[in-house]
Amino acid sequence: MPLSKYLIVIVCIVISGAKAKSQTNFNVTVFGTQTISADQIREQYSKMLTTLQKEYEANKDAYHLTRKHFANQLLKRGDFSYVNVYLLKSYINNISFIIDFVERQEAVARMRFRNLKTLKLGDPANLIAKWQEYETLSFQLFKQGEIRDMECPVYHCIWAFNHPKLQPYLEYFSKHVPNYEKDLIEILHQSNVVRYRANAAFLLAHSKVKAQELANVLMPAINDPESRVRNNVMRVIYYLVRNQKGVKVNLDKVIQALNYPSFTDRNKALVILRSLPLYQVLSKARLKRVLPVLIEILEKKDGHNFRNAHQVLKNISGEKFTYDDIGSWQQWIKQELNK
Image 1 (spheres, rainbow, N blue to C red):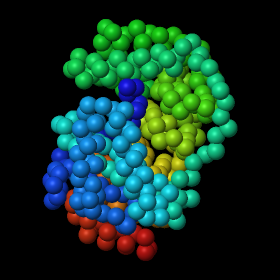
Image 2: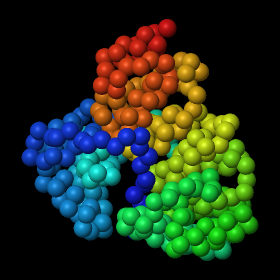
Image 3: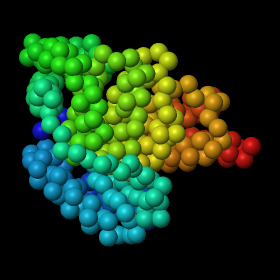
Image 4: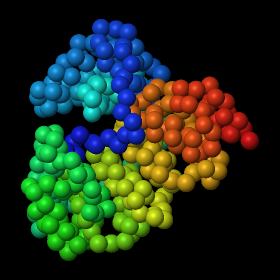
């Protein structure tokens, strides 16, 4: 399976989930609604969660079908426009379920994606197909423990290219991407195939343009209607902001993405925000948008995201409250928004 289907999660520290009180030991996070709780999910859907874990390990196609079926069941539990079930497996094999909801009354604000006028576009120099090969092979090699050197020679890498079997792909991308940059930009913004748009974001990291120019090219796709595309685009932007001095981004777009429906939206928006100098620079209007989401992430221990949310809060505030000192953070937010 192509690696981008895993919607790679960027973490600071991997932690184990707390044991559930019900029949399963799964950590469950419910985000975006108060209509149904994590405890209710664990208690009422214990068999479903167990089935999803088994299928995730043994049969990904069955897993995705069951996941969609479960999401459709949950969609009927309230006035929701969106429900997504996401299984997160840590590097130490802890299983967490993140259940994302968008209530219908918040759908306009939380699902404000761009309208794409898509075209049927080709695959220049077979680059999209080559990228699929690279993703599949690099993931296999990583799982087998054959990739240890993650040094990246371009703007962004997944598992890098430091393996004899992967080096030819780096050479291929380095040779052809600069000749087809315009084609890949068109694919990113207009292809009618989600996989093409998602892969184009990663391929453009092999271009020869300046870092700021690449960030400018990628920014409009932050609000692509497909989470897979948004994930890849924000991942590359994060690497640009982190590693390339002085790269500027549209902060309002990143803040908007923080409140998008998916766990991976929050994950990538958080790591971008974590990498920006935010202390005493956010306007009150921006604080009103970003702080409620950050505190919800912190309160609900949202997957691995709460560690990043904690760091963003510290960057914004200059305060050093711990991640579990919710009361102090709430008090600071109340004071800040009432100034």
